[in-house]
Length: 357
Image 1 (cartoon, rainbow, N blue to C red):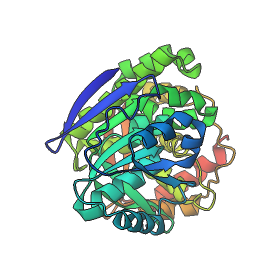
Image 2: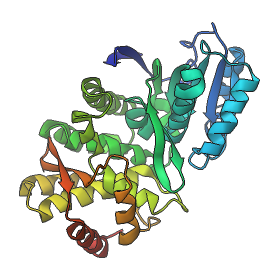
Image 3: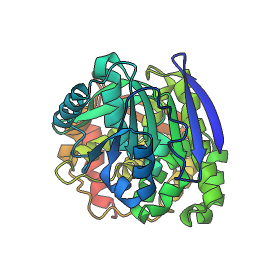
Image 4: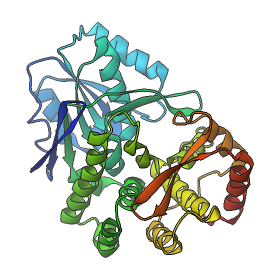
């Protein structure tokens, strides 16, 4: 078991990594009421989790469709449930599941009575390397993803690599997208390491998975510690995400995997940087090669240029322009405040026409 400490806004977050599911709740104290907001599928798949929760006398609030229930209505229902159980400010919430669960549980924790203690147990690779790190919480609003949210750190994050063995290939790749992103905005060495470990990653070798998870977490933790509220360097973590959120918003009626949208978004960002001649040619080629080296399935993703550009205009990270994180080189991200909407719209249209699913 390995522990990593990182700081954000003077609050320490304890990260615990383990290879066993059987003792995940051991480090959670019983000094207060505790409600576990849990993905029902995760509970059904791992019997020992229910037993651990019951042995601790914790309450369980099951969520059957996390992305659909990441809404104002579900948020209100959870608040009503906690209130009916007389939860106070010294009580605790645990989020058990993927990114949608940790986003929702974090938002509930940050707003109920102005903040409860909050612990995350992310069960997907995406949640482990991205959603659980950095203190962002959110729910969707209408057709806009993560429109309502807060910055609120958990006191503890418990990560178990065994959960990843149960993910299907596309769910696993869903999280790997963020690992690839962290490498591309960091350094050539980080990219080279992923290329060297390609086979072990694809085979989900436990030691390699723990290694890349911890490295990816450390990359994000370093950035978040320096810029918790996203006023500077943290914005680089949005590489590919402005395009990706546009793609996700265009697919809300048939939700798609976030990581797959991010992969397409990073490809769009790389090609756009090439289009405006701001990226090193070799860096563009190497980055695209890395993104295409894994078997992402994009077949169910609808790409509509008009819907994507309209959603991008509504992105909460924008001011008076559409802000794009692009690369000059691997490890050298920058922010382009795009004022030429027509150029961007034409690029997106051409990209979609030439994109191979």
